[in-house]
Image (cartoon, rainbow, N blue to C red):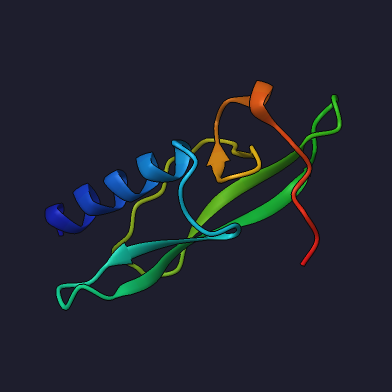
Length: 89
């Protein structure tokens, strides 16, 4: 369990750095395959018009931070100053 929490933390840090697919974060499995572990759920716009997202675990053993995230054009970040509008699919 501790290892899974550590892996989830490392995954979340990579998301903050701008990596990952919009809307979903992945985690490497023991077989080296990527598995979805976190998705970002829109919760509304802030006073400046930036869409805010809340991370939500897709697995019971994944921990997520209690923070608000913004899309920066490449990934999700907690830095509101880097906010850009997420492209529509």
